[in-house]
Image 1 (cartoon, rainbow, N blue to C red):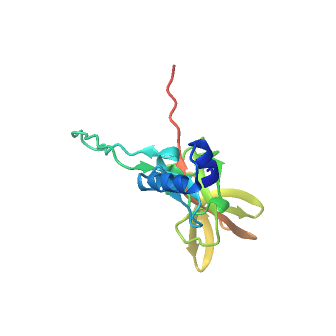
Image 2: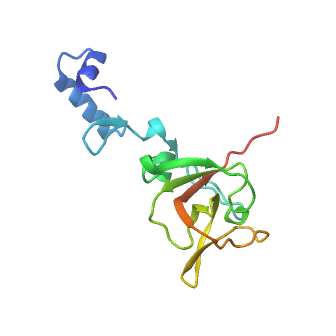
Image 3: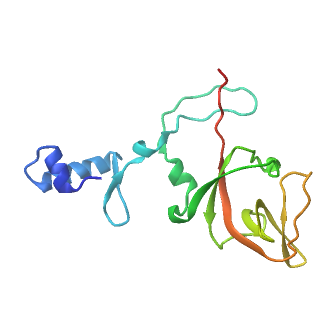
Length: 174
């Protein structure tokens, strides 16, 4: 984002004070926001998608269109930008969790994981994505597909990340 001096120059203001007032107006209108250090950052409409209402996924019902706030998927799905990345899914071992081949999972590198989390793990020098489970005070991995067996580590099990969300893009056929 531009500095107050750059804003003043951009709008042909004679003083930074006028640029400061303009920036404050933009903040009041949610066009701009301030980060934790007070620096100007883009508002939600720059990075977000407008929430337009709700739609019934069960029986058909009247859908109302209500223009709502803007939702930044980044802000909604990412807790820690420095520790978060995407992985493309290969295989069908997590289909019962709603994670399909070709999807992307948003994962966060963390040591704050819990039994039941879907994790990115290194087990016996192989990488996988599975549910983290515990039995007899020992961790093991469980697929989200009944055709795959549970994985009990013979050696070491390292949890590297927790899956926070999955993303799927639907393509139209032409």
